[in-house]
Image (cartoon, rainbow, N blue to C red; front, side, top):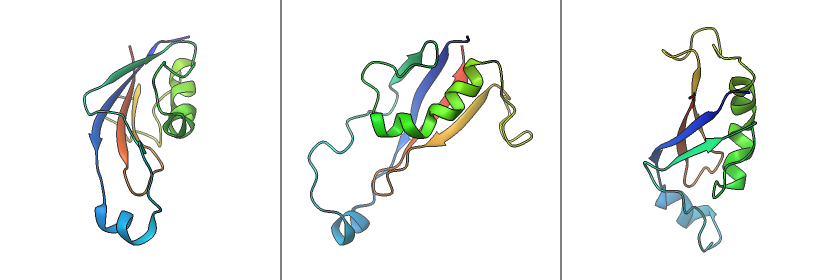
Length: 99
Protein backbone atom coordinates (compact mmCIF):
# COMPACT_ATOMS: atom_id res chain seq x y z
CA UNK A 1 0.00 0.00 0.00
CA UNK A 2 1.07 3.55 -0.74
CA UNK A 3 1.68 6.06 2.06
CA UNK A 4 -0.71 9.00 1.84
CA UNK A 5 0.06 12.57 2.87
CA UNK A 6 -2.87 14.66 4.11
CA UNK A 7 -2.20 18.41 4.26
CA UNK A 8 -4.57 20.90 5.86
CA UNK A 9 -4.88 23.55 3.15
CA UNK A 10 -7.65 25.83 4.42
CA UNK A 11 -9.89 26.15 7.44
CA UNK A 12 -13.04 28.28 7.18
CA UNK A 13 -15.47 29.41 9.85
CA UNK A 14 -19.01 30.68 9.30
CA UNK A 15 -19.88 32.60 12.46
CA UNK A 16 -23.28 33.70 11.12
CA UNK A 17 -24.34 30.06 10.65
CA UNK A 18 -22.86 29.05 14.00
CA UNK A 19 -24.79 31.80 15.78
CA UNK A 20 -28.04 30.98 14.01
CA UNK A 21 -28.04 27.17 14.08
CA UNK A 22 -25.40 25.58 16.31
CA UNK A 23 -25.46 24.83 20.00
CA UNK A 24 -22.21 25.94 21.68
CA UNK A 25 -19.37 23.42 21.32
CA UNK A 26 -15.93 23.52 22.92
CA UNK A 27 -13.02 22.38 20.77
CA UNK A 28 -15.16 21.69 17.71
CA UNK A 29 -12.06 21.63 15.49
CA UNK A 30 -8.47 21.78 16.65
CA UNK A 31 -6.85 21.08 13.27
CA UNK A 32 -4.51 23.84 12.12
CA UNK A 33 -3.82 25.06 8.58
CA UNK A 34 -0.52 23.74 7.30
CA UNK A 35 -0.61 20.60 9.44
CA UNK A 36 0.54 17.44 7.68
CA UNK A 37 -0.54 13.90 8.51
CA UNK A 38 0.66 10.62 7.02
CA UNK A 39 -1.60 7.61 6.64
CA UNK A 40 0.05 4.20 6.43
CA UNK A 41 -1.98 1.18 5.35
CA UNK A 42 -5.01 3.47 4.97
CA UNK A 43 -5.17 3.93 8.75
CA UNK A 44 -6.18 7.17 10.46
CA UNK A 45 -3.09 9.16 11.44
CA UNK A 46 -2.53 9.95 15.10
CA UNK A 47 -4.19 13.25 16.06
CA UNK A 48 -6.43 13.41 13.00
CA UNK A 49 -10.08 14.42 13.45
CA UNK A 50 -12.35 11.36 13.53
CA UNK A 51 -15.20 13.14 11.76
CA UNK A 52 -12.91 14.43 9.00
CA UNK A 53 -11.42 10.95 8.66
CA UNK A 54 -14.83 9.52 7.80
CA UNK A 55 -15.03 11.99 4.92
CA UNK A 56 -11.52 11.51 3.51
CA UNK A 57 -11.25 7.74 4.09
CA UNK A 58 -12.67 6.60 0.72
CA UNK A 59 -10.13 8.78 -1.12
CA UNK A 60 -7.24 7.73 1.14
CA UNK A 61 -8.14 4.07 0.63
CA UNK A 62 -8.37 4.41 -3.16
CA UNK A 63 -5.03 6.22 -3.41
CA UNK A 64 -3.32 3.85 -0.95
CA UNK A 65 -4.39 0.94 -3.14
CA UNK A 66 -2.91 2.46 -6.29
CA UNK A 67 -6.05 4.14 -7.62
CA UNK A 68 -6.69 7.75 -8.45
CA UNK A 69 -7.88 9.87 -11.35
CA UNK A 70 -11.08 10.69 -9.48
CA UNK A 71 -13.98 11.96 -11.57
CA UNK A 72 -12.12 11.50 -14.87
CA UNK A 73 -9.38 14.09 -14.53
CA UNK A 74 -10.71 16.35 -11.78
CA UNK A 75 -7.26 16.94 -10.24
CA UNK A 76 -4.13 18.11 -12.10
CA UNK A 77 -2.27 15.39 -10.18
CA UNK A 78 -4.31 12.21 -10.74
CA UNK A 79 -2.79 10.69 -7.58
CA UNK A 80 -4.41 13.33 -5.37
CA UNK A 81 -7.75 14.73 -4.19
CA UNK A 82 -8.93 17.95 -2.51
CA UNK A 83 -11.60 17.03 0.03
CA UNK A 84 -13.41 19.07 2.67
CA UNK A 85 -14.72 17.69 5.93
CA UNK A 86 -18.46 17.59 6.46
CA UNK A 87 -18.65 20.33 9.11
CA UNK A 88 -20.92 22.95 7.57
CA UNK A 89 -19.93 25.51 10.20
CA UNK A 90 -16.13 25.01 10.07
CA UNK A 91 -15.19 23.23 6.83
CA UNK A 92 -11.56 22.18 6.49
CA UNK A 93 -10.02 21.49 3.08
CA UNK A 94 -7.48 18.68 2.84
CA UNK A 95 -5.07 17.89 0.01
CA UNK A 96 -4.69 14.13 -0.08
CA UNK A 97 -1.80 12.77 -2.15
CA UNK A 98 0.39 9.75 -2.63
CA UNK A 99 3.87 10.18 -1.16
